[in-house]
Length: 323
Image 1 (cartoon, rainbow, N blue to C red):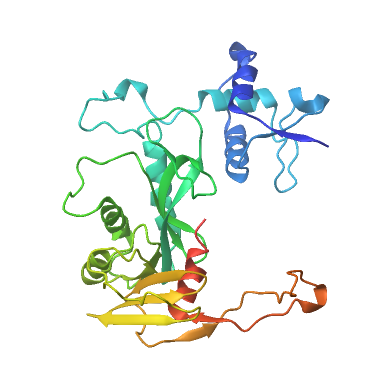
Image 2: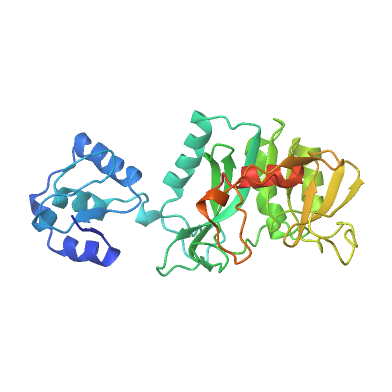
């Protein structure tokens, strides 16, 4: 049976036909089913058969006919998380661009921490929540899989569990100007894991020797990640001009290891949780032997014993868990 994702325009058109006078207050049973439908599905999915106009279909966990379509749309229409009478002027110094959902957003963050304690290894990164509507803080990042949308910073556990999140709302006029914006956001969000001996992995957008030093000194958090070679205090001329694949250059200072490893290109790493010794491990990912003409036959699909520095392997392992 063909299926279709319900767009915002379609939802609005359906809502125009709703008879609001014939609806009583939503009971708890429908409220629970509504919440389950929203959280279990990334999109509102409707069947395009003749049954489309009568019943809402849920495609997760084998559920069928969760509630009448009009009941679902009515709850969706009047669902609200803020008091419009308390809206502040945009010119107010305390105006919050996320005020419409601030209470429920903070409640999510609070609940994340109440029900779960993260493991030793966590990851920090930015993700894009797909959104093409009109909003002041919408971002365009061409290197991301989802290029347009809301930028969100996340701390994720090694299992992929989101432990903390923050929406990027534009330049913060109150932030510390003596340090970079990336330093400030990492430093602020890692308060929730300070003093517990966690290890955090991050990419070159956030990494810097200054950040790693302060996280360890002030919060007992070790760090590891890729790094831009032009970062302040990162060793200059770490790698020779010409490096062959597999070559490695390492420098160590004040408990921090800077490394350059040549794979297909030069990869710069910074860490204060690894030994400066050149430790290599076998890459467990499958790589296929290729014929001279470039084709691969089924019989030649073998696991190659490739090696890489442990610093790189650990970084790849834990950053892959962040979605």
